[in-house]
Length: 493
Image 1 (cartoon, rainbow, N blue to C red):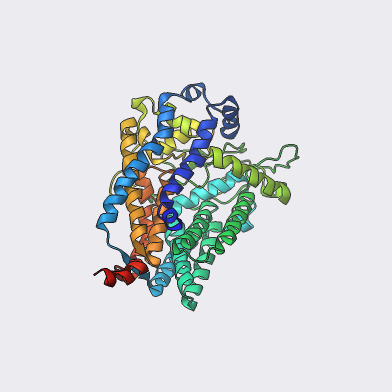
Image 2: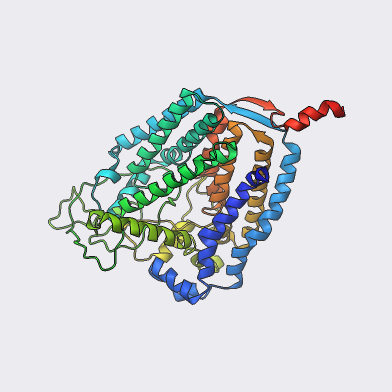
């Protein structure tokens, strides 16, 4: 029973994430109270969007995953299971150390070169809009490869070190685990985000599950994950506590962030910037670079950052109370609030963006980007920063080319997860632990971003599986044969 549950874990993650992070909010939106809660979360709900809630397309997109993905997944599992031999593969600790050290040095040098190597989230006193503006500036300046290392490569190296330690204790793997743990914390605090550490702890938990050892570590990992997330949420701020008097400082002139260097980047899905009342705000120019609105007295060389309440305006108790409340709301409505907008906006075929290719190399970026278009529809008043409102692979497919393409993507998702589950069933050893983690994260991201994005974004499958592939060694075919089968084979021969 335990082994079967582990093999099916990618499907459990897919349906769990889809049901909780999108489905719950979408179902609540069909009720008057749920629509009111969604209005409170997003700030508004246009009548033309509300009119599509509960439509046949609305329910079809919501329920089709439960019918299509399991059927296609069974086909993918059986085809791969019959073709893939049992195998065992270890991981080279030396390769992992070299990869993780190189990745961290690259990230540190990138932050140093753009002037953000000090983890500002711990030391700077900024308002929420200023935090978001700083985050966007770093995203544009650091580039695609930087975030691939932060989101995927370094956390996977850490998870593989843990998988090796759960089998055999060595000082090399222990030092590697501590080093990558510290590196992931440092980089997350330096780029004003929460999601990389959420992914990190999720991968550590998956490493325990797929290793089938060290089960007592799971509650420790869970407590560390929740505590870290709430602490980061309370540090970033961007909240108001009803009834509290907030002393909002006057706009201060701050140094301009370094000019972004052109680089491809995937949409950031850590936090969608919520409408906030910045005093001087930043509008986005057609080129994508912020137009800085100056304060008085004007200083051309030092434009003002958006302002608002700072975290020090609130007590620590208020910060953590807000962090818990906003997290609960985000679980239900962060993805669920965008779902009605996707159904409503792309009900008109003329509004659809075409099949996404902007995440692939050497291809030009399209003028219509799904999550950006929906964000602008959801938050028309937010002009001080550009944001993204992503959706699951099949919902994005509806916005790309319609309902038929959405069903096709669900079939491909099911086949992919079925093949991945078969690899989990046939493989053993730390390398296959890494593959199991990568497939599980792919299942999660199929509920968060477009199909190609789940494969090729900076937090895509290609980068999660990379450390396991390049550091694999001692691949032994037949390494996962059950011991009872091996002992009984001679007697039956």
